Each structure stands twice: as C-alpha cells, then as structure tokens.
Length: 276
Length: 267
Ligand SMILES: Nc1ncnc2c1ncn2[C@@H]1O[C@H](COP(=O)(O)OP(=O)(O)OP(=O)(O)O)[C@@H](O)[C@H]1O
Ligand SMILES: [Mg+2]
Image (cartoon, rainbow over all chains, first blue to last red):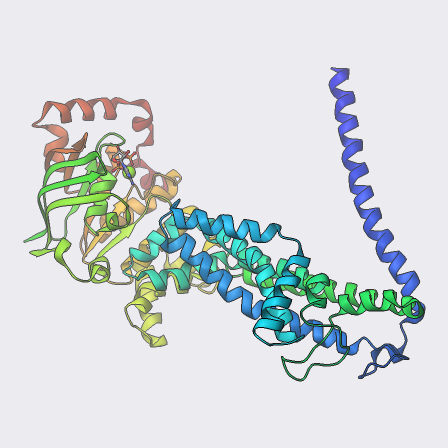
C-alpha cells in the first residue's frame, strides 16, 4: 500500500520535473535571445533597404512572408487534393494508396539539405529559375508536401462515414459531399498541418541557401533571389561583426512565429464555434 | 397502390448471401416496421430501398425493387431516387454546420437558392419534425450543440426537407433516452398521415405502437409480413411466434414500455 503511494509520488515528481525542465528550457532560450538581442534592436535594423552597416532585417522579413505564402500556395492544394484522392476515391488499402503513403513517408524523412541540393540541380539549373524565390518556394513546397498530405489524410479519415452517408442519402453527389460536408469537418486538422508546414518553412535554412540564394533585398519578382529571416540570421552569425544583430533578428523571428501561432488558434476557435 | 414492391430480391456481400429471395409490399402512406434478431438483414434490406448499398464494395443486388412501378435499380439518377426516398440513421449524424444549414442542405442540393423559399422549407420541416419550438431561436447555432434527441429530430427534419415520398428509419431511437424516444415515436405517428415510412426497430412495443404493418426477418429471409396487430396476436409462422414471445417477455423489453411515457409526462 505504501509502496503504491511512494510510486505514485515518484511519478508525480517525475511528471512535474519534466514539465519544469521543458518550460525552463524554453524560457532560457527566449531569455537568452532577448538579453543578447535587445540592445541591438534599433530602428536602423528595420530600414527599408539592407546595407552592410545597418544590416536591416526588413527585406528578410518581407521575403519570409512571401516565400512561406508561395510555398504553401503550391503545396497545400496538391497535398489536400492528393489526400482527397487517397481517402475518398482510391480503394482503401489498395496498392496505389500504400505506394503513395510509402513515398510520402520517405519524403518526410529526407534531410532538408538533400531537398536543397535537388532544388538547386532541378529548379535553379535545369529549369533555369536561378537562385530565386520561385526555386526556393518550389523546393520547400516539395519538402512540406508530406506534412500537408499526411495531416489532411488523417483529418479526412477521422470524418465519420455517417456524415458521408447522411449527405449521399439526401441525394447529394460525391463531389458535393466532399466539398460541403467532409472538407469542412476535416478543416481544423488540415489547417493544423498547414500551420506545421509554415513553421517548417519559416525555420528552414539549408534548403534555401542553395535555391533562393542569400541576397538581402525585397524581391520584386519571383525570379529574384531573397533571404528569409532564418537565412539572414545564419548569414549574420557567420560574420563576427554582426552577431548581436543576429540575436535581434531572432527576437523578430520568435515574434513572427508567436503571431502565426496565436492567429492560427484564433482562426481555429472561430471555425470551431460553428461546429461544436 | 403499392409504394414499394420488392420481388425475388437477393443480395450478396461478396460470398455472403445476406438477403434471400425477399418478397415485400408496402402501401402508400403506411408505416411498416422491420423486426428480427441482430444480423438478420434488416438494415441491409432498408438500404436496398434507396440504393445506399451501392456504396458497399462487393455488394451485389438481384431481383426487382419497384417504387411506384419504377425499377429503382435501373434508374439512371440515384440522386433523384434518394431525394424521393429519405433516410434517417441509427446514430444522429448532423453535419458540422448550423441548424438552419443542416435542414437547408437537401433543398440546396436540389437547386433551391432563394433565401425566402429556404426559410419556408426549413421552418416547415422543423415543425413537421416537432422540434421547431426548441430550435427556432438558435437556427444559426451549430447543430452539434443540440442534445442527442434533438439532433435525431433535426436529422428527421433534414430528411423531410426534400419532401421525400418515403422515409426510411434504421433504429432511429436506439441511441436515445426514453424521453427523446417517446417524442420521436409521437412524431412518427403523426408523420404517417403524410409519408410512407419503413422503420427498423428492436423494440417490440415500438413496432406495435407505431406501425400499421410489420415484417419479420430471420437469417436473411423475410419470414412473415402482415398487419401489425395480426402478426403480434396471431403469427402464422412459428418462428415469428417464438421470436415475439421471447422478445415481449424479456425484462428489458417489458420495462421500456414507451407507451406510458407521454401519458406520465402529460400528467
Ligand atoms: N458492408 C458489409 N459487408 C459485409 N457483410 C455485411 C455488411 N453489412 C452487413 N453485413 C452482414 O450482413 C448481415 C446482415 O447485416 P445487417 O446489418 O443488415 O443486420 P441487421 O438486421 O440490421 O442487424 P442489427 O439489428 O444488429 O442492426 C450480417 O451478417 C452482417 O454481418
Ligand atoms: Mg441494423
């Protein structure tokens, strides 16, 4: 009896300790970055154009938003439609479903530098897009495709068949059933995958250096080179002169990620108000 | 006039012979109850009547199923058939949208666009399903926020909104509490003046209480079909007699007694 009690207490302490450790790690990283970066967070860091004196992050910030949006605009439709095919049209457990699933799992396990290399050989050189936002976005789109595919596949599978039957029994066709009933029911799950993907894109460096290049400018065409905030940080930390500005950039990156998270959960909450 | 007329119906799920040589007739504006032990093919039979079995892989249907003299298995447009033959499922399955949009889903599917017309249909359907008073102030609220019993009546309203000629119900009250069950039974008794209804039920009192005709299924066969009173009091087939006597004397069936509940509530 007391043995049980002791075990329970130990478990409780272990749980609390891991929570504390996790929270402390996060707090430490944030604090470290803020302390190191805050002194360098000057207005000149936000100048419209970059030069080697102000090392402005504005072009990188804008490039991050553009590149993320472009990568998602390419990856999300492909991923969602592929998952619709896998779940709604292909026979469940058929060879093609298994094949595509194996492919996407393999794709998900490949290190991002390999995508970078592929992007450089294929988009930059072979298709002649050069080091550009387009090459970078296409490469990252391929990289996050498995995430989108997987999460929307799971979201669609989680929609009970009784909803599909309900719609079909009212005389609705398959397409209407999918777009009016199944997709809205699966939307939160799909959206979660999209947010996860945007996190991957925002945090990526390796695959971008070889595809989008590292020019610090606001891209006015998809064929121009640009660097995202992460690449910008990588570049700054490589130059011993601007490590402090690198930390300041990290603060901005953290804020950006926080904004994405808060905005997405707000959107989810809004959407959920109409269902539960 | 026969609303449904089924002849020589055989249905296979792959190797399994699930419905064997079914003959079944149903008159216009009658309630027919399908009874029988679990796994005897009641749901399967119900689903042949609006071709929901088309969705099941490896399912083969032979024989003729006629709806007002039209063979439904040669109809080119399944969606038209399903508009005419509505269905309500065992578990309430409201769509993840508002109460209003749930009921308007069917009419919209079949091309009704005018807001005014939709509002009219929605109100009428909700009234017919005896749930209007409970939801009229929350039409914009998500359907999932209703109680289980309300959700099931909403599903009935949703089915009624496309003005079907026949309504198929597969154990519509088995997932509900006695109070909601009583409400839905009340509702079904009212519906029989306007619709032809086929209802699957495990509850003998329910069958006796609400139906005009009863059909008894056993192991994929339709053993006996007739007037409900007749079938319960003087079953022609001894298998029917045995099933009914066991079911009616079973304790859980006896204490369900849905007949008493509305009276008690009224008092
Ligand atoms: N999709 C399916 N594939 C293969 N066999 C099925 C399928 N659906 C039902 N069956 C089988 O067909 C038989 C009849 O099933 P059905 O669901 O019609 O029974 P039921 O009378 O409705 O039973 P219950 O009262 O439990 O709902 C059962 O033996 C069942 O296992
Ligand atoms: Mg059944």
